[in-house]
Length: 208
Ligand code: T5A
Image 1 (tube, rainbow, N blue to C red):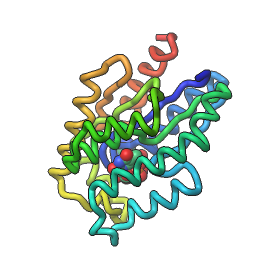
Image 2: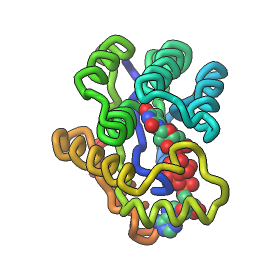
Image 3: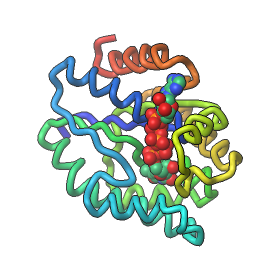
Image 4: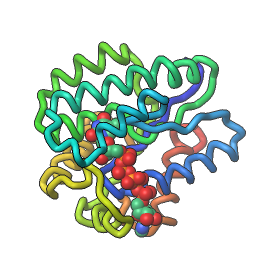
């Protein structure tokens, strides 16, 4: 793959959307061609799957059905958008990717992580993000930001213990592979968070 693949992760309300803008500015300042996309979603089919996943009326959704829907959307996203972009030398900036599946469906829902690894292999082969930014926050603080924004979706309606497990999942993954992950404290003021993000990107690009 000629382009680089960057993913941005974290628990609810951690500031992914806000900080993705900062990454886009960093890419634009360097004249790097990129696409910004998201999961679940990113394609017409994937966005329909996203609507099913976030619909808070789908209270009976089985955890395994949720897992398979995440990977169904991802398979479409990879084939239709991510792989062609990377092959053309375009960078991909993705709001969540498979780390979210390990964190939410693995640690949050308690699904067998070996099964997630099997699906990951089936859907992605050896393709993984080159750099993953994990924004880390106390889930209570993140959810207070989300609540201030309005109505909650199906995931945002989960209990705080669920988000504590998701956070643990992200932190464990970051600790296991420090070469790929950068964990940033997202409870700091936005300017400080973005200083850390830019410094990490500079190191990733060999400029730091
Ligand atoms: N999911 C996803 C899975 O379960 N498995 C998977 O495999 C995948 C891919 C949808 C859901 O799907 C689940 C996880 C999710 O629950 P989503 O829409 O990406 O995914 O998830 P959300 O976390 O809901 O995204 P949000 O858009 O709600 O949150 P953001 O983008 O993290 O937060 P953002 O940037 O909108 O910021 C929230 C508020 O905080 C403020 C912002 O101004 C905003 O008002 N803020 C700050 N305030 C003070 N200080 C700072 N440092 C701040 N940073 C941001």
